[in-house]
Amino acid sequence: QVQLVESGGGLVQAGGSLRLSCAVSGRTFSTYTMGWFRQAPGKDREFVGGFNWSGGSTYYADSVKGRFTISRDNAKNTVYLQMNSLKPEDTAVYYCAVDSDLGDRLIAAVYEYEYWGQGTQVTVSS
Image (cartoon, rainbow, N blue to C red; front, side):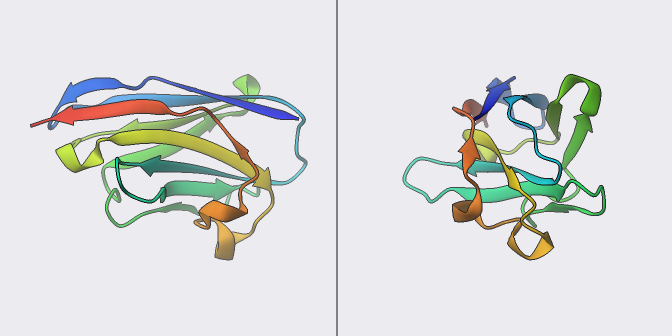
């Protein structure tokens, strides 16, 4: 089994920053895909960003490109989502997810991921 625990959410004013963390424990994958997703009230869960284990490209949704950055600390088994220039429309519950290597084509496919964290609330006030 894999456990993912997100942290770092909170309330921030528009234009502010937050850094979310996703700590991964349990079963390890030799190859994997990790993604960040978010879900606003009444909306579907959507892709925010993600990367494959090989360390190639990191992909971002157009809505966050240039403002959000994903990084990882392999020694701590932790992935981060740095969020800058936050907007009220970024308000959502943010989730990290992982699965065995999905490849670049499926990296944004929310229904392909098997393992999910519990989510952390991000609220951006105007």
